[in-house]
Amino acid sequence: MFKQKHFLALGAVTLAALLLLSLPPRVIARLKLALGSLFLPLSSLATTAEQLPADVADNLLPRRELLQEIARLQRENQELKVRALQTASMVTENEQLRDQLRWQRQVGWKIKLANVVMRDPANWWRTVEIDLGSNQGVTNNLPVLTADGLVGRIAAVWPTHSQVVLIGDPNCRVSALIDNPAHDVGVVNAASTLDNTLANLTYLSGTAVLKPGQAVVTSGLGGVFPKGIPIGRIVDSREEEFGLYTEARVKLGVNLGTLEQVSVLFR
Amino acid sequence: MSNQNTFMIYAAAYLTVFGQAKLPGLRDWFGAQVDLLPALMVYTAMYASLLNIAGLALLGGLWFDSLSANPLGISILPLFLVGLAIFTQRDLILRDLAFAQIILGAATTAIVPLITLLLLLSTGRQLLLDWGSLWQWLVMIAGGAVATPVFFALFNWFDHAFGYKIRTESSFRPDREIRRGR
Image 1 (cartoon, each protein chain N blue to C red):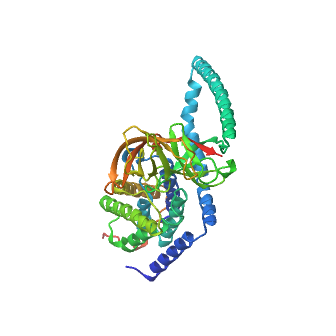
Image 2: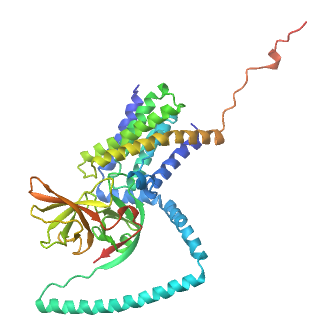
Image 3: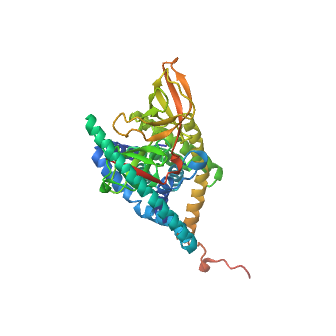
């Protein structure tokens, strides 16, 4: 049965929880950083343990195989250098043409690689933590992607790590453009809880003609994500609210369940 | 409960929270991550003091929220509520029975996320919830039900292996022995 000390303990814990929940965001961020840093020793230990088999395998690779790999990478490097030169000349040409037409110059984006170090332990969020933070110049709302497409955006930043809210989380809405003749625009919204390779594309025009396989890219509207980052492909579509608007399911280009390395886009 | 076991409970909470964030666990197979803190709370509520229950709720909840997008402190109250409920009724529960441990683990793991979700929704947050969440909830309940007897076995073994028991004095005294015979 409940005794007085039980009520006192319940009151004390409730008060402590309410105090924590009512703290200002800056104090909460510092507290989260302090508590999260308690896991740093374990995190580095886990990273070392993960790398150990790979290091052992690297040491066991025959020299001939390594030399072949170096030769292949050197060839690829040469090809990429030529492509980079071609791209640089195209960028210059593009800027000259923009100047002639008096169009606004496009701001270039820089990329920094980051490792995914942790996932959200709660099932109702879709976030990950990466090992880049404000010390490396990361700020809120920077786009995060991989070679396969958009991953999400930075939601919280600490000095050494950041939280990325993934596409498909209700807190990461992306304005998207469909590669169809009408170039319909919609919003990539919350996805299925069980399948993290799918997302919903909502607020499409009721007259939108969608076919499975059509590419979906960022529209550039909203100011967070630059235009043209691949998001995925249309799987199927259906009319909503008696044909008032169309909703579609999008197969994401990135498998969010197996993320290991991501790139953060900097302006 | 011995001091070693109290320390072990906090260490287990720390490792559990880290493991849930670092390791895929059941997420890749069943689409849900199992929360083991409620199962740990069952053991704590059965054996430890009210202070330790509050301590586990505070530390476990804070650690969990620090690695999650949850608002800091939201997980404390649900953990403490279930811990307190078990603590007040623990004299009536057959804690050594595996069946009782499984039922308590399942019930606790079912209730904690529900209260947390209610608190989160009451703060106006938008969460990733649909019919699939029901499946995730069932996976969490099953995980909690399995984990609770494992925690009991682990901590009881640890207590037996490293805890010094107070030696009970025998009431036998040789000078008071009744010698039979002629």
